[in-house]
Amino acid sequence: MFAFEGLVKRENSKKNVPTKFVFNKLGYSWIFPKQDHYNVGIGNLIFDPSCPKPRKNDLLDFVREELECDQLEHITGFPIGTEGKCYEPSSKRMYLIGDAAGFAETLLGEGIYNAVISGKYIGNAIKDSEIPDVVFEKYTNFLDGMKKELALYNRGAKVLYKKQRMSYWMLKLFFGRRFMDGYSTGKTLTEIIKGKYPFPSI
Figure 1 (cartoon, rainbow, N blue to C red):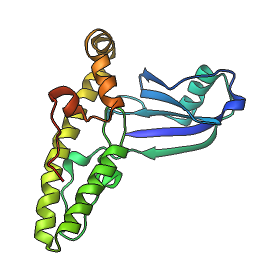
Figure 2: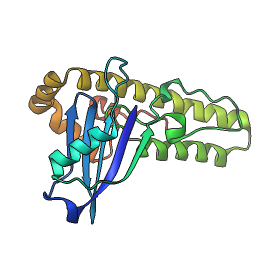
Figure 3: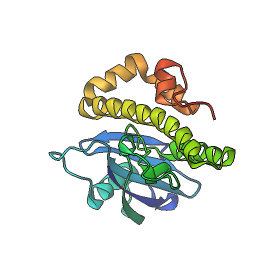
């Protein structure tokens, strides 16, 4: 996954725009209102060699259309680590968490929750035992749940981004309220769909 993001000062925008997601051929674009600026971005969430990658000009075009503004600051481009379903610790004395382990999910590109929860699991495992094998076993149990969760997000993203018209109507008519309510209360995708927490107890 790859994304560009930048900042638009509110005083430079001709529109007052709420939080917004716009799906497009590159993946999706976003606008997050802050106190004195908008965080704006564009990214692709499905790797497909046949599809173009987002460029700075695509972000500028998006800002011109949505905010009627040409002044975009602090543009950064960055990869989003989403390959966590393949992560295997290579040592019993060193572990990766969050984006470093590829724990961002592919549906919305969100990674903060998984970064926090993976940090809590390894932190508690180390706090509870000085034996590397015990720490390894506890974190590996957590990783099993994380990999299943990331695989579920991957399946959902493939449907959402490759079949956008069908996904739009499915969300509008059947599942949209359930997913938005679940996301807004901090539930994982497994909790929203199956009603159960995907990770072992800490």
